[in-house]
Image 1 (cartoon, rainbow, N blue to C red):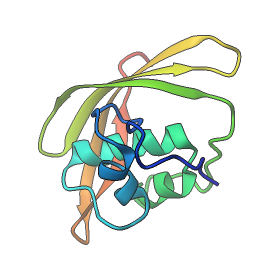
Image 2 (tube, one colour; image 1 turned 45 degrees about the horizontal axis):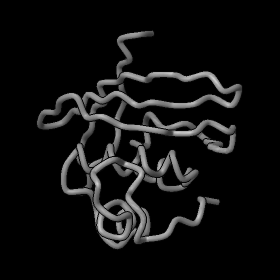
Image 3 (tube, rainbow, N blue to C red; image 1 turned 120 degrees about the vertical axis):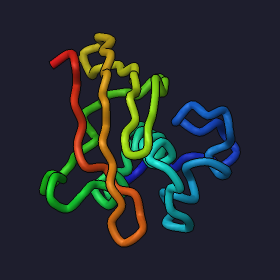
Length: 128
């Protein structure tokens, strides 16, 4: 179950807009992400808020895991979009692991449209 998040607070995705005017409507299913970057930001916010159902729903059926548990204690503390294209987004995410260590995730994510909606296909992590 995702964490209840006030719609007037800044969105966890880092746009500076309120959650209610940013990722909130996407998470609630009231609108779809218009671009791969908007989808990537909304997925980051869903990870930050523990909304595994949204993450699963926006993951391509052929590459998504069968289950996803976001209750491991990881805190998502910052997101920077480094670059983007027609169907990809490169980003850097700052995380704080359950043991207190800081972790930097860099990924180049790929997206495709399925029935007119953007979904996450897969990603490459240059650090791996």
